Length: 214
Image (cartoon, rainbow, N blue to C red; front, side):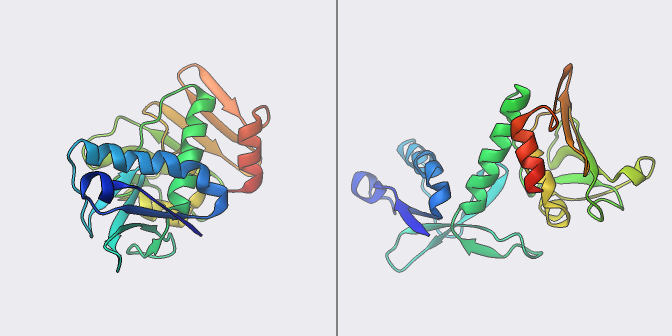
């Protein structure tokens, strides 16, 4: 991975923020560093151990031996969260979620992976699922995640992070606003809101997303 850093120490006496990414995601580093620089310019002080929401992801700042603040992210391999150095998943998820919203012509409304959703018993056990978003409120993201065979079965609440561990294919769609629906099957992806529908059999981005089984 390559390290990128802010110039906050020289400009504001604030610890520099360091983000580490693989080359394929370095296109997003300028935006991310700019986010931190803007917040410090506004007077915010970041500290080691602090968490920051970036898109739906929650990242953690950790001090290093150079007294910089490195950005760490969830590893998506265990509960509770296993923190790993870098922002590869953070930027990848952000880019995917923004692009899904763009294909539908809507603005993103990112939840937090700490927020809850309603998940049916069979969700995550197969390749197909349906997800719909109601208005979020407090810790409720508004998302309902259902396996097709559980259509008439009440679900239970869990964090979106836990839901993503059970089936990571939901991640690209989590930034969709209330009123959105997603049907994901082995045959195709269909995303809709109000009168607008896009599907992987006619939309190139969704076709590639479906082919990647991400």
